[in-house]
Picture 1 (tube, rainbow, N blue to C red):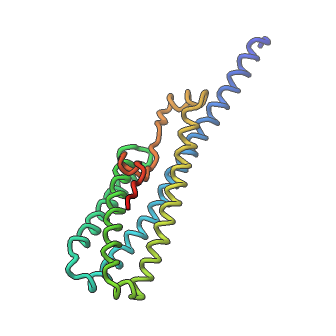
Picture 2: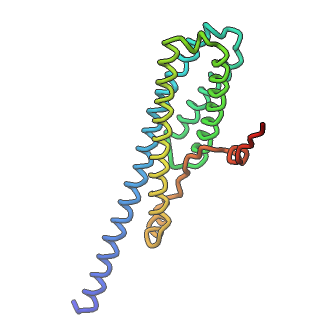
Picture 3: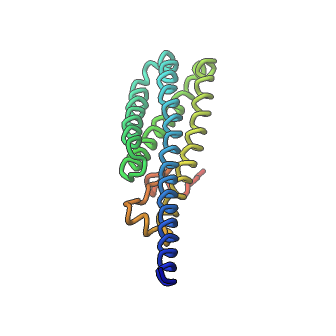
Length: 197
């Protein structure tokens, strides 16, 4: 072997080791997104289990608020369906957007539920209802934190897949951009709040 062949083989080996390292890094980052969504799923399951208990305790006080209960129950079912779609592939943008929309519907239904509960002082005073509300609030905080971790993992993955020269490995092996979870779904939600007296 002459010197030029050794140099070419050395450069080839360096490029090969770099490409393997870049590929493995992209795999690790993609798996972190899957893990981050699994953490969201755990908290969503916890919330999913809490909501019927909350509704059932409230139902005995608020018997004529049937529409509110149905809205919460339907929104809860939408979130479950969207969550199941995302579980199979948390890197696809369509299911992530569907989950974001379903989460918005559930948040709106729960806000209406909370406002309706305010009209029932005996319900607010119920100890079991208070415990359920506290647990639900704690779970909502965990969901928000898990969503933040998911978005951080997604950002790391997207940055790695889009930065040169790793983007070459990403395009060769089909690493596509992952979608982040968004808290808002419309421009109206992002608009500043107008307060009038």
